[in-house]
Amino acid sequence: MEKVQKSRETCITVAILLPDRQEDEVSEHLDELEDLIDTAGAEVIARVIQRRDRPDPATFIGRGKAEEITHLAGVHNVQTVVFDDDLTPAQIRNLEKIIDIKILDRSSLIMDIFASHARTREAKTQVELAQYRYLLPRLTRQWTHLSRQVGGIGVRGVGETQLETDRRIINRRISHLQKELDKINLSRKTQRARREQLPRVSIVGYTNAGKSTLFNQLTRGEQKVEDRLFATLDSKISRVTIGQNFPVLFSDTVGFIRKLPHHLVASFRSTLEEALESDLVLLLLDISHPAVEDHETVAREVLADLGVQPESILKVYNKIDRLAQPRASDSVLAVSARTGEGLGHLLDEIQQRLMKYFVEIIYAYPIEDQESIRDCMRRGTVLDVHQEETMTHIKIRQRRDHR
Image (cartoon, rainbow, N blue to C red; front, side, top):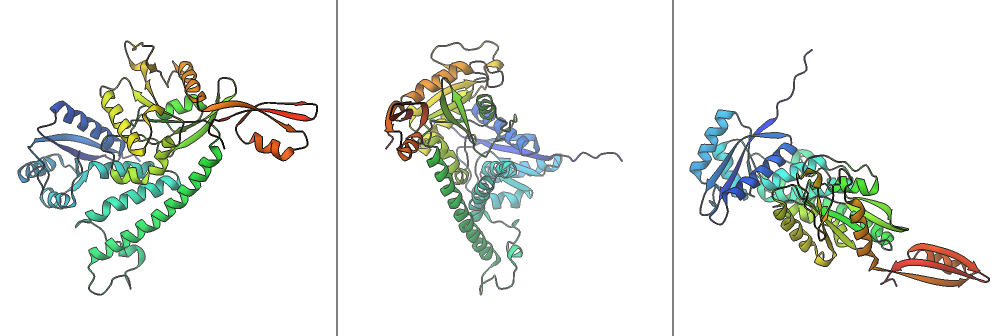
């Protein structure tokens, strides 16, 4: 039998051009939206840019433009219309009535991608929580009743509408997921406490900047690497020894993107806080991307929201192998995570930056005081142990603020 290839869902993308925005900027945002749609498994067949003084409160783009999109969708047999901005619940309902096909905004699209990429219990819980928080005020005529999931008998209160029932079930699910996430967060904090004596470095940056590739190069790991947005959701941590006996914990976390949905940031906060708990944050930027400066701005805004101090951020340009003429500068760290170019210089800089948080101390204990010796060895990295007559001398690299 001949294999039939399943056709991809087709979409129209929509954005508005406000007086304070440039057409090139809006077009570039739609390019990124198209990449998101491709990552979600669909394809774009047309894009619509509407010039307006302000968004229309009822339909975002105005009824006339919505009717034009209805005609365009009919001509091309399109299944979905995706807006580059977030829509209000009322705007979604009104657009569904006019266009009569599936309406998505940027946040719902990103959350769909996160849902398809979540692998661990923590990531799945984070994504589901964000989806329900986003969905709660957006219950529309297309919503399928949740009461079927829990059994309809005895669920509905006297005089309660189906919409009210659905909202109550969602609120109950949100409460349950939040409790689950709190348990996971408590476990994560315990794990961080065990690791606190080692220097920690987080790799952060705009999605698809090459964070997982760099993580694999530094750790010889097998973190999933794809040339797609949000290929990595689950943070991964690995111990690496750099220089002369200088162990470091590297972590790779979820990427940033402009207009990252608020509910996702809230749900993934515990994962993103790996950066806040780190001694050094590597801000990785794709030097070959035309919007690299915008990407840096977005990443720094997210880090500032998390409370990461600017002085702990080390900017690193990646993908220099894609440049026809590499940018050479003593003040700029530039690497190729794919080829390994520049990684030696990067590791030297990382060690130099981290050394200011640590001090090397020699402790001396009587040989018979084994309890104190074991406690000392847990304070940091043991560099040397030797005995002289009745004493054991232990050289430790530990945090300067160790209690």
